[in-house]
Length: 66
Image (cartoon, rainbow, N blue to C red; front, side, top):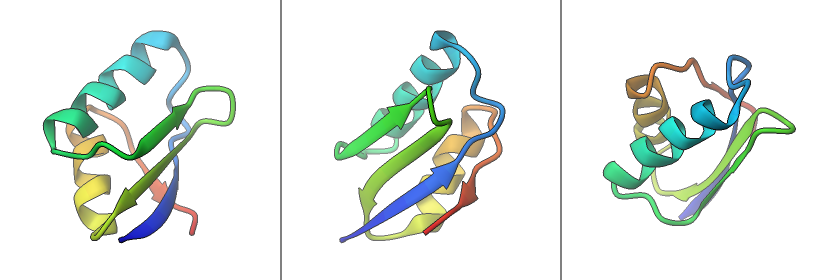
């Protein structure tokens, strides 16, 4: 497992945070932090593309930072 940090520039409110959290949970991720203040999502995962796809499924663009 690796730690991936994604920038999610369109995340702007609590509802956005809840949608992304739900999408990650539904995709099977459990070790993550959705930070509205910094507009980032940090996830412990084996595949960064799977994380990006889950965030995309929630309706948000995600850019891998690390």
